[in-house]
Image (cartoon, rainbow, N blue to C red; front, side, top):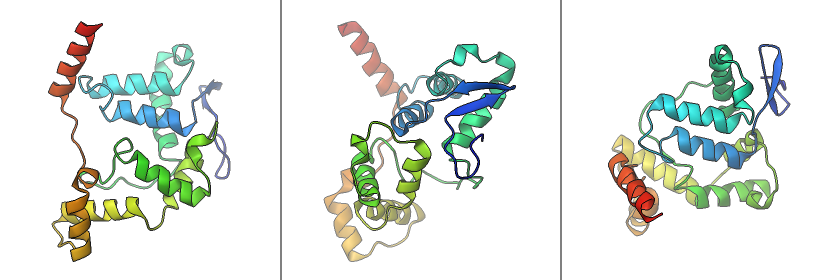
Length: 190
């Protein structure tokens, strides 16, 4: 990372050349949607990474092919906000798209303002506020998902919450076949 521990990187230095990056949290959430296969489930992993690189680096075409591995490493470190924490194995407990209203409410509470109204917010600042989400609907939903994933018994109030909000708690799976069919139908309608 080029900005040090207290800075917010706005470019990547690759092979001695600075390349601009898209650092606003909205851009990164869109990039994550592509990486996760939600934008186009028909793409394989390498195609999704290629799209992510093109989204992250506005001038990706100028990056020499031999620097792509370093550019990918930079993107990976940027997504993790420079943290070197190992990823936890197991199913996901959250989805940036599905949980967007809950996340926005929690981050808004942590930030003291609705961050969606801000013209720009660096991804790392967004993540810092995300980490500061305390008690609330999002924390409740994630805690219930975690208990269900691990086969733990839900408290009576959690079970009641789950029954009333099952659509919010259960993570939707991306069905590649359904998405491909939907895409095909949309193409035919155009």
